[in-house]
Amino acid sequence: MRLLLAGMLLASCRPGPFDSGLFDSVGPGDSGDSGVEDTGPPDDERGFGLLSLNLHCLLTSGTGFADNRARFAAVAEVVAAERVRVIALQELCVSADESAPELLEQALEQATGSAWTLAASFAHTGWEGTADEADEYVGLAVQGGFIQSRELVFHVQDGLRRVGVEGLWDAGFAQLSISSVHLDHQHDQARLGQARQAAVEALVGPAGAASLVLGDFNDTPGSDPFVAMQAMGFDDWGAGLDDDRIDYVWAHRGVPLTVARFERIFTGAPWPEVSDHAGMLAVVEPADPQPVVMTTVSTEHAAHGRYLALRGDTAPLSWEQGWPASRDGDGWTAAFSELGSDFEYKWLLDDVDWQAGDNRQGQAGQANQGEVDF
Image (cartoon, rainbow, N blue to C red; front, side, top):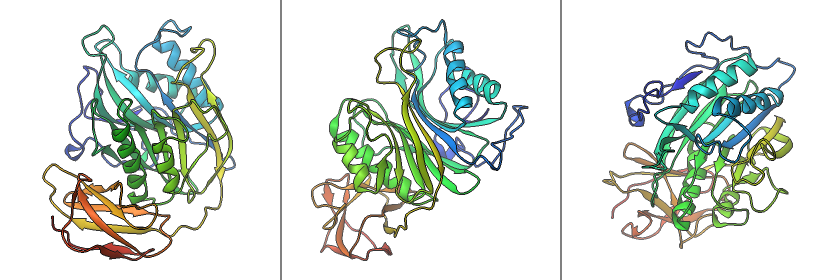
């Protein structure tokens, strides 16, 4: 497996920041030094599986597996059987004794006979001070390689550090933006801010509306983060499953895919009988996407350790709560696919301090730019 990390995590080393080369661009099918042939699926079998899976770090308690080598081998068997080509991973852990990335590398490449690439971002240390202490990462694994990948650090944090990973991936028939995220588990407002940013980041990304967001949202259907994703044009492919789930595969209505089958997997023996860490499997096929008209709003501001959020008068914008923008240096951009008419807006620092002056005028379906003063 090609690991897009600073090292192989053998000593629980945490990777450096994104701009230090943590996520390097690699070409599709780049298998690194794994020595495994990257065959990919046959041309006449373009349907494939997408899997979101919280690994529950390196814990095997409550399962029927003797160790993680056996547990990850069982995961890889399902990956091969369902022709899964993309896996969004949460609680991808490295302890003093074990490395989930290494175990996954061995299991996936043995089960599928092809190379995989993993991009991962350090989130926080879990179970600190206990025998189960390990560094937690959020990861995104794809069969073959990424065109490019990047770390997502959420602007709104409260408690444990939360991050995501976004990769631009060539599915053969289209380039797709796929994000893996793990949102806050204790603080409602932090979780909502992170969900809103995840939606914005996906639409700002290079694939635009051809985007999917997978992961552990730590909240149930109908919650505020759930409603936020829907407001930005994302469909919950797990609709119809139990209302107590917290893991999702979100697909923007502009993604060129249709879901043929969706199910919760890794439940029942030897997996835990009851767990909020079951996998979410979507078996998808190529499809014509819905037409999407994108609206962007951009500005430049140093921010000095703070972040910019956008509010406005037209849904999904509102004057009550902002959408955290995507940052690139001193540039900030918010993207929307569901703005159907012209609108008024203002930027806020930390979604608290309003920009000076009158409301700005925005045009739907256009790239709106302007200076901002606070």
